[in-house]
Image 1 (cartoon, one colour):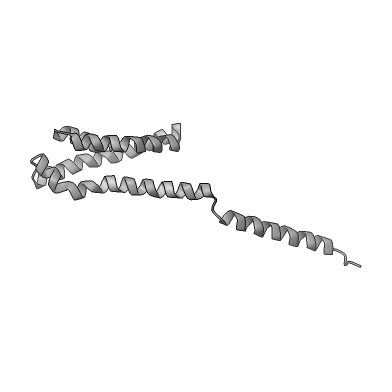
Image 2: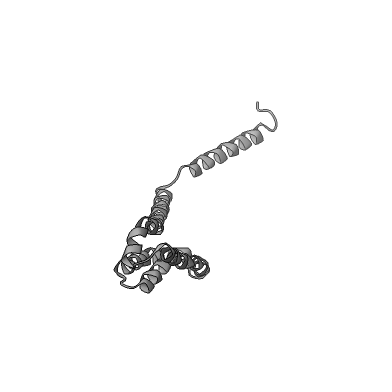
Length: 132
């Protein structure tokens, strides 16, 4: 014969097992989660490359536009104005959604990089770099 309350104890232990199973299932990333993480890390690497290439290319940029040390420093100061764009894009992401803003930025980045690469004037180069 069963003891009083043993069925309640069995139900509680069953609930604990279900909770443990659910927690273990949540710990295993799904294929969608892995795709999302790969996409995020890829995007970060891509954007990091586009932002760091100016430091590597500084001697060639200075030579292309006949800039001295102060000229290249002034150019990079103007390019740093692009940080204000982050504020604008964050507000835009709140209104239209992060996905649309990220996809738009990912599409605009190579276009602005191409524009900067083909720019013949310092003004156009700086404008494309700010938009980049």
